[in-house]
Amino acid sequence: MRRPHSSPLFARMSGYKSPKRILTVLAPLGLLAACATDGVYTGGDAGASHFTQIGRATVAAAPLSKTTVAEAIPGQSIEAVRHRVEAYLTQAGFEPASVAGAGLYVISGDRMASAKAGEPAKAEAACALRALERPEMYTTHVDVRLGPAQEAGVPMGIEVKVVELDANLLSGAFSKQTCQSRGVLEAALRRAAFGG
Image (cartoon, rainbow, N blue to C red; front, side, top):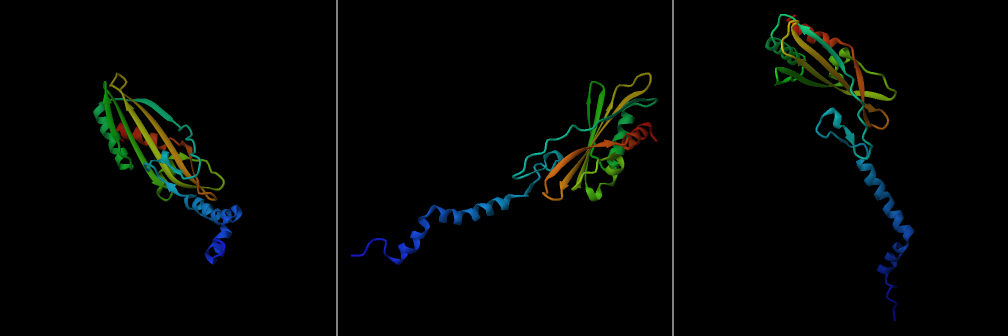
């Protein structure tokens, strides 16, 4: 009488009953699955603040630099100043949007550019050089605040925020850094507001 496990089929399968052999087969599969997601980029909503990677810790956003310029534009109406500022921002590659309330205007605009097309951002802001980091993208945000006309003219405040997105040359991880405005964009906005 033959024993139940003496058949060649059972003889071949009996070798996989050992836990060590099972782990030997499954370990490479787990490594393959981990590698399949490593370095995968997900852009989120494609905004610069939403860059992250699967399997990597999200980099906390640093406080954005703010350069605020406040002055009065004499001899102008608030509508004329608003139209000039919006026209300049549109020509400079921003998409301006105005919000009015209680006699005030806030004109905001954003501009994103890849590192290859980021010459305006490089001219307008100074970003620190980082070891093993390569610039990938620049984001510039502008807020122009216009107040009701006074004796001195139309009060105007300008705030510029510039962020550089960098990629690590070894790991591919993304990180953001705050850049310092050079005052170039602020000066151009002032000239536009004056009508120059």
